[in-house]
Length: 134
Image (cartoon, rainbow, N blue to C red; front, side, top):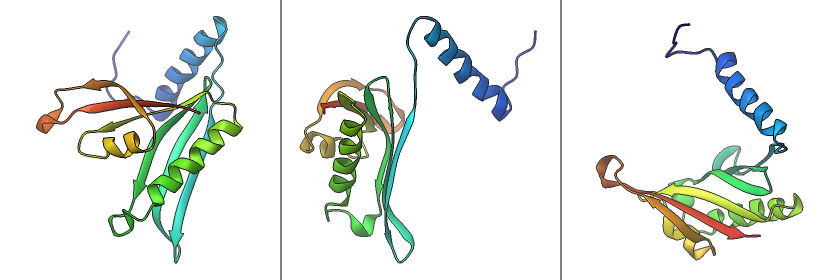
């Protein structure tokens, strides 16, 4: 047996497949449905969201708006759009985590409840965990 700190993409993907296989054996199947959307201006991406629906929840991975377009409601519209996709996919809630230097209060204003904080990140940052019923 040997350890590799640099697995190939295929080896890394096998870990996820094996975990999904184990979960399926105990009756938990994860069917991942991507939820992605972007705002474009003259072909340039100025905002976007990436999420995935699985296990009955919408998991928001990334939400970004170009600094020139912030405070114009694009982030809220992207979040609303993704939440609506989650409802269509019969998700019961949306979950997201964000760093303290990003936009945790944005999610509070959008109706999300903070259910956890992990402290001690570099530079004094913390990670905030949120959930919202759909």
